[in-house]
Image 1 (cartoon, rainbow, N blue to C red):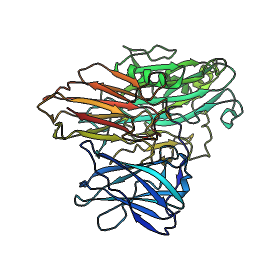
Image 2 (spheres, rainbow, N blue to C red):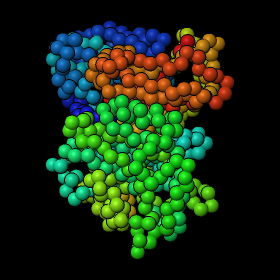
Image 3 (tube, rainbow, N blue to C red):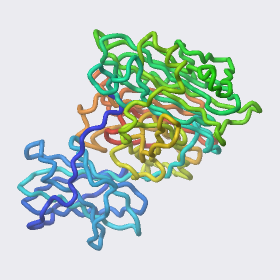
Length: 506
């Protein structure tokens, strides 16, 4: 599924060094990539990077075992060492067991770093080094206004991904509340699940006003898809960028301004509104995947963006339920029980923003100086400043439960301001998961996809590394506009997988 995480194995500190050797050097090309073949014999082998690497760069180390092709993860360790012999702290003490990548962020003066490959036994290998630019992100609202980062909410529902009758999530009758969050201002709600029940179900996104003043709701975009998960996820984001108002069974219609009255204990259902409500097919005989997003604007009666104050809280619940349960769920909104309330680590809720924004600044693109950057995703937390999105979960009574450090970047849209790019030639942009970034990726992740939008241009979309499409990279423009406000916005599927590289070159 789009956001399914893969197991990772800790490798830090598990290798006892017995001997060491000096291997071949690594020289980086214009695109910041180089590789070397080597042999480890029970200790570590050092490979000096002859190219100077400045501060504030991301160094990606990749590893291929050419001896047997499937080395035990615990028997190998990759390290990056400064010119004075100090080890650079990696951004994570784990590596992905399939991709075998480690990530480092450079500091200090430009210098020649060294790669160390440590092994407990004889091993022939190839190590790749990729140096890309580090970006500083700031959260931005769901409409991606670069100058407005406040008054926004992001809500994600993809736990549990699999809904089935034998799991604990179906223990409370004809409905399950999957996630709860408080909303404010511009809001985006994402969901991705798999219906493994033996019947069709309903997915519902319910807004309910617990405050003492009415709130108006406007629909900005909505898309609901069922089918095979990766094409469905891709199409949802194409709809989102195109501002498609996908029809479903909800009470929120495009062109209408719906008002949610103030909360009343005598009639709580009057303060609730289904903003997305659709039937999702079972996995028998179909695929059972269902995905969607809805983007809304919440306003006060005076037209200002809504922000909670005092007892004024607008909650959002995402439900999976029987096809005829919507009315009873809505009427009982004040008493509905959260799913697995005691399992604090499993629930996700709302956080600030549904997008991340980075201004790349003045960049001169020439044939000898391309510009590359990574969108890192879940496997490399904190590798790019500001990239993490914190999500808060809520108990039944609406109190804060806990805050998760990261929503795994599922459904996060990254927006880059590339207005200050300069070049004397045409500039093209390429997105890729290819062997330069990671030699282990080819064929392993058929479901990775990228959806993107360049302001003033048409939407581009592709399935990257897909058996159906067979592409490992995608060129989205051969002549990027320059001299005015130009933004590139991308959403990447399967963000627990290797990072996406974006390169601008001539």
